[in-house]
Image 1: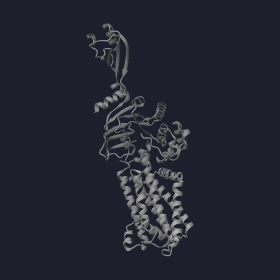
Image 2 (image 1 turned 135 degrees about the vertical axis):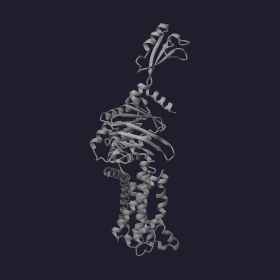
Image 3 (image 1 turned 120 degrees about the vertical axis):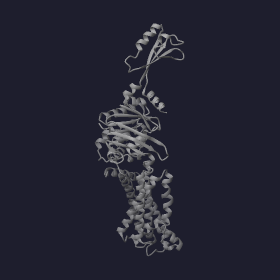
Image 4 (image 1 turned 30 degrees about the vertical axis):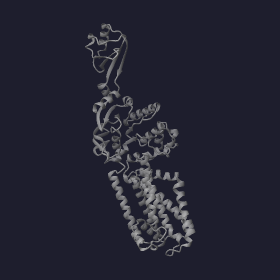
Length: 308
Length: 253
């Protein structure tokens, strides 16, 4: 299947001389949730802005639904909904008017029933006649999502949608995202909360310094880079690792209270059973055991650090 | 053509006029009435007729132009500057809408507002002085052409301005002297030859003169020259806008 969004060799140099994107190529499949991870200034927003038509690219090509975003901008922009990072709203407008305005801008005839559904889905229905300045930050964020959904887009860009949003609202927003995905909408989100990407995304792209460092299925990425660590708390401290355990790649912490064993979860044998037996044979008494899996955050930091 | 989008922008802008009815409509009417009271009634009574037209009537086209210019530039620039300032411009830029349609929406609304206020002032003026319009079609031609041209000019200022200071620079500092010295309140025949010659470099003179001719058939310059100058200025604004849209100047860079 042809990708819904195809980015090839995209570069952007701002008038100030800042090179925000350096030859980025990326394909996004229809119906997936792609998380775009990257530190501040990595080029995430510039990339989204070019696809949506807010910023002109210096070179390269982007297609959405097989159409060129510059030449066929009417087709591509009709397919796209954008929720920007900043809470930019027209303070004096009502929720209903501003969402209806967005639908009109996208060339769609008024459809009060659709707007009503969008507002209800986002728990904004009882605020439809309030002006935007009366709303809390979280509600404004939802209004921006409602605006982006007002014209029934096939591709939705969420630029840092949960920045400054409280936990319960964040959860309800992810519910909305799940429902949208179920209805076939492709979702591209950027986020600082890596655990969110871990929870919700199908694929992860890591961008830094204007370059895509990695694009991978989330599960494959976790499996490939996901190391697990077994920590063995000892009843009595050791001065050094006994000879009998030298075949295991163990490290001893500074106080000699804890043995640390790194293993690969995807390996056929993790070696844990053998290790525990060897410990018992050596006469080492254990106080506690714990395991820890490297998170996407660790992976992310590793990749970005390696890229430096 | 994305008609829905043009309508959306147009009515969104017109809705702001409704919300700010007092400052958009009532205040220009009050200030114009004050001009008529001071210049028309209090002082005007002591000023002799100019080319057979009473002073109060003589200044009416100039006053309409003063308001029309200020309003159109103000509305045209604010309409596009405000979304730039608040950031809501992202939505217009990411919509399936061409630059021409954006201009139709914003400039159309700004020109409509200017024309509404200009008409109200004409009605207000007719309460103070006897007015007759010799060439109604020419009058409407100058009226609409000025509104559209200066709304476009305002739109360019709105895109160019990077803060409120720059936004107000031209409407506050450049337009009033040009209007006041462009024969709004006098005929340039009253000036010494040197200043009369200098006045011919003021584009607003042509505007006011042409507009006044459509009322009273008196003019400082040939009405055709007035129309030509206006059309040249309109073409100039359109060229600048085309360049802005081609390059994405200040909008997409």
